[in-house]
Length: 105
View (cartoon, rainbow, N blue to C red):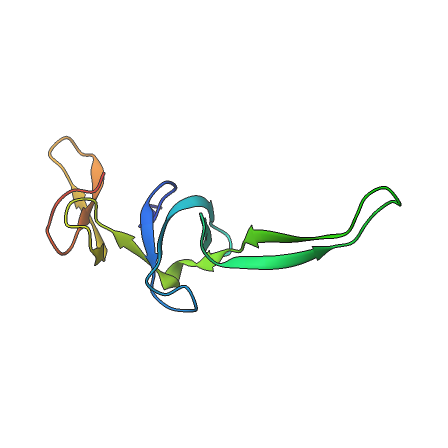
């Protein structure tokens, strides 16, 4: 199975409160169809103190985003694009930008 969005790709959020913002993919969760994007979809978690010496705190962390809400940013034309696959002469499979027809990999 070939993925249209991979780790370290630059993506743009297409819907939600962070719509239009860009970031790099840090982690892909294949079973759930989600990705963690650096600096986007920040949530707050309240952490209870576990001992008398440790204080309770509020932690900000990145929550996973559904892959359907992410658009790959083409490194050549710098626009959000759909991804296609192409088989080259040496039988290698590469991703390409459907806007400018340039290879992404």
